[in-house]
Amino acid sequence: MSTGRKPATPRGIERDCITLEAAIGDLPRRAARPFLLATVGLPGSGKSHFARGLCERLPCVLLESDALRRCLFARPRHGYKESGRLFTAIHALIERYLSDGYGVLLDSTNLREEHRQILKQIADDCGCPLLLVEVRAPEGLVIQRLRGREGLSGEAGIEVYMRMRGDAEPISLWHRSVDTSWDTTAAIEEIAREIEGL
Image 1 (cartoon, helix red, strand yellow):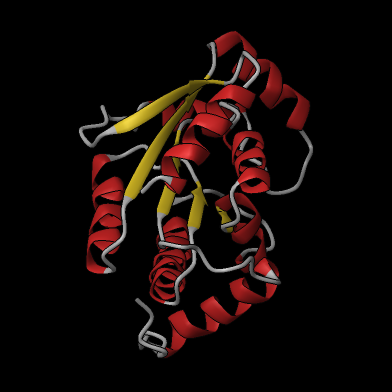
Image 2: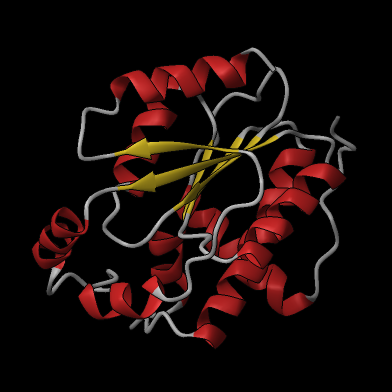
């Protein structure tokens, strides 16, 4: 699968990739077959907790968009220009890691269909399967979680949640749904086995 070379990227994007790779740190073992997993869900839905649990069960490179955003921006605003720069680098890294034989898990909102189609195109170009996992929770619980984050630097709060809620579009691609108001252990195991069986 791996060509042994890293895809060429423009200089500015490459600088961002180097910054993000330093934050990602040590990589897990390569996958028997590279794959791309991506969460879909609003802030506070439980995406990061679910993604970390899945990474404990299934070795893969975890790309947490909120953590990576803080690497590029001292005071994240979660605006469109900022997100454009961040995800240009993240997409380049996904392609790089898949091409080098790793499984990748993108922990991000991925609320718009155009963003999910970009991930599908990257996976298709790398000859890898894509699995989307819609992560959700009742709004009351989401608001409670977001209130608990208030004051944490760079974390998406209630204001960002309210703004992004209007961006959410129906998922046309095949996906799984997980309700994080319940124990997600069984869902994590089921998804890990599905990936292992590809």
